[in-house]
Length: 421
Image (cartoon, rainbow, N blue to C red; front, side, top):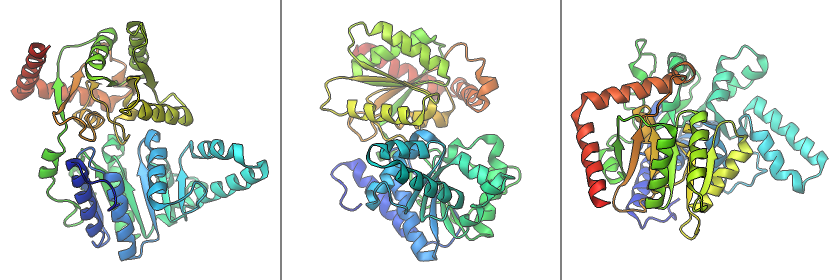
């Protein structure tokens, strides 16, 4: 990791964060937090902490827990690349709903059916045991393991003892599971001698519940003073509006911003909204100026991975075809891509900040790039199906109404853009 490029300011900061996490590996077993602004390189920094901490304290394995299927494959590939592991290595186990299908598709062209059957059998056994040195899994698999009444699920619970368990994007933890989650990780740390690391750019205050049942270490933050990093890693400017937009109106804004900036990422709350905005963009892009891509949780894992790889290729500076991507919130956290402009449907502040992390991620522009936020009309169904997002949207709108700096900053920025145009 010391050989990584450190010529830019952002890469130098990532290097410093990584070194601090490496040194923090000497800490005692406990529950810690890693709060790094988006784009700060927390994936590899947290792995570096885990490796050194496991060596120092004699932990048996590292379990990396991720909330979204969209970034599990990306994270596992990053770990394999940096550790020099091939796809068949049993050092790293990928355990989530699409892992078996993904692996089968990768080896199908080069393996006999007997080999595939044997390999799949071993993978299923490993998924039941969790005795590999490194495990990449999802929050769903983790919660099902520690709360299940089924013996096949509970079978691997004991292998969480004496481990380093990293929870990435912990702000995505559903609010109605916080107390149970706190009880579980406190038990794993204090009773089974595991170290817990909670990672996020927008760290939730899990210890502030009424029960106060998250037993954090005495000095829980691996990096205590992050203010200087926040200033140096500020690569975006939030431009928010309280004016409700229809899907067609937001589609027109997205298309205009894409033509102005060269590409654009749009993140919305509902699959229906993503579909309608995508159809609007198809009507607007009559000359096929842009490559239009839509992402949704309704897609299978392989299709979603192919689309993310396609986006990465289209964002390469040498690619002549610009891209517009319309996605649900699956892309807003953890996905290592960098757009010149992001448009976000109104949501909670944590979602807005995570979405901003997909804009100007590597400091391609010295001048901060704009992230535009608009409330969408007709989101009544969100209160029923996505109550956490609906509550976050309502709270953000209240903050904008109650605090004048939101209105002033957004109004001045909109005026500046109009004058510039």
